[in-house]
Image 1 (cartoon, rainbow, N blue to C red):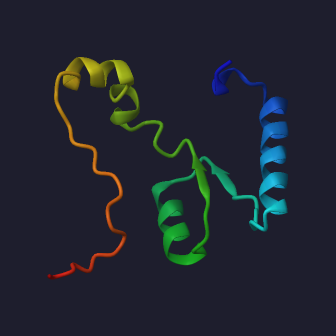
Image 2 (image 1 turned 120 degrees about the horizontal axis):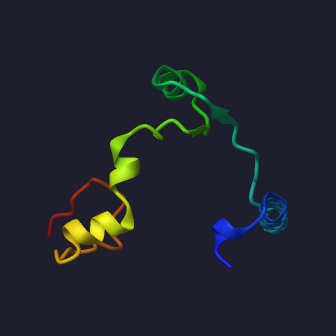
Length: 98
């Protein structure tokens, strides 16, 4: 069963189980506010004023990339290209000199 096949109640139960497990390990778990029907100006406000996590449901639904950047289209257009995956990069922008 894929995650997308889960019912809403299954997702809620899974989320509650995960939240409870994290809390028992001392992780502070709080709900993230979800805003539906947000505008780009709402996003700007959240970045500059709210300064807390927030979900903007549907904000990018009209963007062409949502329709065009499917796994199938990416494979068709770029499937033969080689890429280098960079893993374990330093988290600091400071460069060490020998």
